[in-house]
Structures are given as C-alpha cells and as structure tokens.
Image (tube, rainbow, N blue to C red):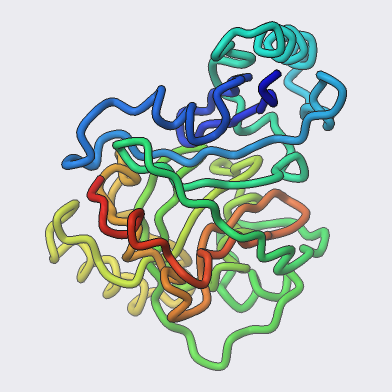
Length: 276
C-alpha cells in the first residue's frame, strides 16, 4: 500500500491527500512545459498519524469542518484514490506552521527540490504594533537587536497574498511587523528575500522611487512595488540563500515566531538546469 501524504499547496491555499507521493503529485499537477514560469508553487508536507492530521487546525469560526474533511480525504487516498481535496481554499492561514514537516519548491514541469529545515530564527515578544512605529521601535517590539546600519531589503511575499516590496526592516523585523500591523495584519506569512530588483515586473523607476521614499522617510517601513503574481515571474536562483552563498531561504512566520527553511548545500544539477 502506498504511503499517503497530506500536502498544502502555496500560494493556492489548497490541502490535498494523495497516494502519489510528493514528486508524483507535482508531476500530476504540472501544467505542462517547463519552458514557462507559470506553474510554480510550494508543496508543504503536513504531519499525519494513524490516518488523521497530527495537528489541530487554527480556529476559523466553525464555517467548515476542517478536521473532519481532512480525515475523509486521507481515508479516500488510503483506499486508493490518487488525490482527494481536503480543503479547497484558504488552507494556508488555518494550518499552523508547527504542522509543517517538509517543504518543496516545485517548478512548472513538476520538478521538486526539498528545502532543509533551518529551525526557529527568533521568538517574538508579546508587543502591540502601531502604524507610526519607527524601524528601531519595531526591532524593540519584536525583541531583536537593532542593526548597526539600515539597508534596503527586497522581499517577495508568497502567501497569504503575493507582493514584491522594498523595506527598511530586517527579515525578523518584517516578519513581526507583517503579523502585527494594524489593518493589514497577516495571521501567518511566507516570504523570501531577493538578491536583485526585478525590473521585468516593474519599471526601474518604481524601485528607485521606493528606495528614495524609504530614505526620505526614515519612519516608513515598507513600500510595495508589485501587487500581483510574483512567484511565477521570479527565478528561484535570485532568492537570497540559493547555493548557500548568503543567509536566506524561505521564511515562515506567525505572531509568535519566525522560522527559516534553507536551500540544500548542493543544488542538484538536474533541478538547477531545468527552466520553469
């Protein structure tokens, strides 16, 4: 009998029970040719034990039976069904990040690369967030040291929405701010830092203007440059941390802590060379 997996797809926010395995599901869900960057996603393998999710979903107010639907999907996959949807929408924000067991980057053609768990980077203090906070105040509220010198970071947010933004905040500070800021709070967030501006997504002037605005307004913390599908348009190799040339990878945060999933020390050539 094939092992049954429970997979959260990001940014789609769908949870699927499958008997195909991770690579099999990636191939099954592949939209086609890897010559195009139009089928990228993250697969998160979730904890399962004895045919049930080995975690508790976060409260959604009772509008659906998340646990019951997941158990039914796992049972269908165990009985031989290749795939069975457990939750078809908004699964990211109700699935605790403690349920994550493995994370894979998936290219358009279905090729997968497993990320390495880097562990918890920082546990946040319990602090209130105000819109007018300075970056230094954000650092204090998050319980981390203020950097000696502020530099501009380019972050790509993949879930719960997709954004490309320039920020004065370090990854720890940004993760705290994103999960605490009034009116725009994310319950959880997945993001990465990029090594270079992506001028094929927006004009060079948009990035220049964003950097200038952050320089002219030291209290400003973030400036969004692109608000649309980014994951399909940004090559994996421009993520900070690719090839372990610098610290970085995939950041996952909620209101209590920030974790990091790093690229493997050696990227397999057969994955690296495939487009898409």
